[in-house]
Length: 313
Length: 313
Image 1: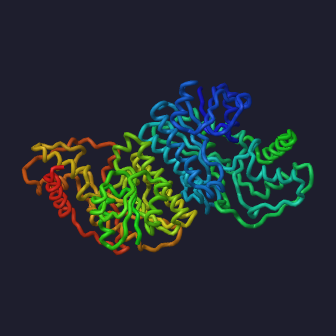
Image 2 (image 1 turned 90 degrees about the horizontal axis):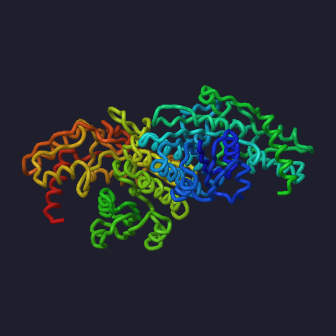
Image 3 (image 1 turned 60 degrees about the vertical axis):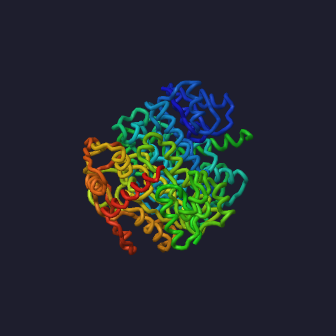
C-alpha cells in the first residue's frame, strides 16, 4: 500500500513510518522538520516533504510518488501547555491543516482513507474510571477543543462526501525518541546529577500509559477495518490500565543507574485532569492486544535514554 | 456602548446595525462588501472596514475608533448549498475567521463580549417537535459542522481565558433585504410572470420562521445577560412555532398582486432536514417576546419586495 503520514518527523510519526515500512508498505511523509534523506530513509520514509500541509504541497507529493491509499494524519499541536500559551497556533496546526488535508483528499484522493490521530484530551476532566468513546466531551484546554474540532471535520467529510475516515484517540503514549514529558524530563534531570527531583502535580494522577510500539500496531489495524460508509468510527487507543505518575517515577528510579529521590509539588497544572484512562473494549473487540506492560516499556525507555545521551547529542 | 458587528453588510448584520444604532450605540463593522459610506451610515454604521477578519484589520478598526465593548459575530458561511459545493471556503468563513477574531479579542479586547451567531443547522436532521439546546448534534452538512466548530471555539476561549461569550442559534430568519431563499426566490419568479411555480421539496418541511426585526432584539438582549464566567450560554433564537413551507407559499400568494399556482417537486434537497423548530423556552425565560407573527412578516416582506423591485435595481 502507498501510505502517507502527516507529521512523520514527530515521535509517533517516525515509529509508525518504520513499522509500516517493515510491513512492506511504501511510506511518504509531510510536515515540519529538517530531515536528512538518510535519516528519513532509516525510519522507512521514502519521500519526505518538509512543509505546511497545504494543497500545493500535497499535490507535489502526489505528483512525485502517486496519490496515497491511506493517510495517517498525525500532524497537529502536540502540547497542552503550548496550546494554552498560543491557541491560535494550535488551531492552525490541528484544525486548519485538517481542513486543508480533507479538502485535498476529497478532490484528489477520494478513495483514500484518513486515519486521524486524536487525543484523550477531548474528554477533559471530571472523569473517573474507564472512559467510553461516547462519553461527554468537555475538553479542558484549547488543545482538547481543537482535537475535537479536528474529529468533527473528519465526520463532516465522511458524512457529506463519503470519505473514509477513522479517528483513533491516543492516551499517554511514550517510548524512545519522545523528548518531552515526564519520562524525558525525569531522565534529563537525573542526568544532571540532581539527587532530589521536584515534579509538578501530586503523583496520584492516573494515566493510560501506552508504549508507542503497541500504538503503531493499533494504528495499522485501522487500515483494514471495514465499516459503513460515512460512519467515522471513533476508537480509544488505550489499554484500560491506570498507572499513577508516582508509579512511573518508581519504575524509572528502579532502572536508573544512580540513586535519587523525588517529591511532588502537590499543585496540578492547568489543562491536566486527574484521571484519563480508556475504556479500551472497542479496540479489543477488533482483535487488538496490548503487548508491552508499562514496567517493560519504561525500562526500555530508560535504556534508550542512556544510550541516546551517551551518543553525545 | 461601542459595538462591532462582523458581517455587517449581510442581511442580518445591516438590520442589527440599524437597530443598535437607533438604541444609541456606536456601531462599527468589518466584513466583505463594497459599501458606500452614505449607505453604511444609513444603516447606522459609523465605520466600515471592507476586508477579511484578520488581526491586522481588527487592529486597524480599534485604532480608528477604539476597542469594542461587544462584538456581534455574524460573519461566516450563509448557505448550506454553497458549503456543500465548497466546504473549504465555508470552513474559512465560519471557523477560521472565528479563530482569528477570538484570538484578537483575547489579546486586545479581553473584556469585550462576543455574541456569536450560530444556526439551527447544528442540530441536523432526524428531529421532530421542539429542539432543546442540549439535544444531540448531528449536523447534516459541512455548514452545520462548521457552525458547531465555531461554537466550540467560543466555548474554548471562554473556558480557558475567561472571555465572555454567548452563542445564539438562529432558525429561519427572514425579512427585507434577504435576497435569497424561499421568499426572495418566489417573489423573483412571480415577478417574471411565471404563472406556475415549481418549488423543491414537498412543501411539508417545518421551519421556525423568525422575522429579522424580532431577531435583532433577541441579539440585543444578549448584551446585558449575566452568567458565570467561562460558561458560554447557548440559546435558541426560535419562536417554537412550526410553519410549513406550503403555508408560507400560501401567505405569499395571498399578498401577491396577481394570481399564480405553485407545485412541489417532492424531492428534498441535500442538507435540508424535514423539521427544524426550536424549543424557545430558554430565550423566553430571559423575558423575550416574539412580536411579529409569520403572516404579518411575510406580508411585510412582499411589500418590501414590490417596492424594492420597482426601484429599478
